[in-house]
Length: 256
Image (tube, rainbow, N blue to C red):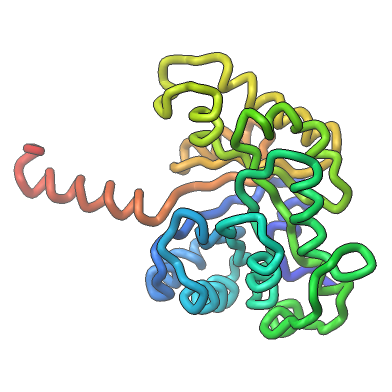
């Protein structure tokens, strides 16, 4: 059966997947952007203000608009991953993964026995995927972990080699803090660039996707040209704030 996951389609055609990050729990807002040629929209369940009911509604809207609904769960807890997948997410991004054992825990929650420990109850997933078959359901799901700590960086080779893992998504801000670096990396700190490069190369050696969190189309294009498989073009609340700030400044004659 053909894949319903637009990210998998992008990768199969040899191109990166471009996505959008949503922290605002509003289906109408996401409806306005999800159909703008995005491969995926990730609902942020870690740092956003999205509850479960809002998440399900957003998944429905994202999929209807043609993008793949993903979710970043709050923690690497199997019940959170399973609940999101049953609700129709076509992938999970799991934060703060620091070891191969933690990565394996996430993978197990995404796969049905005997490959994993996911409980069978695809309440919405079966209609999203178009099948109730456990293999078809599991095959459409992406399990992506985030490396964003010094400990995770030190274990990146083992994490990337985790059986069943689809990709690693780099959280540059938390990685910088964990390394004792400032959030503003415009000062050219080479340690951060080297760390990101190490993660990217570990993914390439293990044939798993590698994503990097951008906040603009320009950064997304730059990362795509560097070979990243999954890049973010923007975050809803940041873009909204920037747009309103610009208009207010224009209204006030350029005064802040």
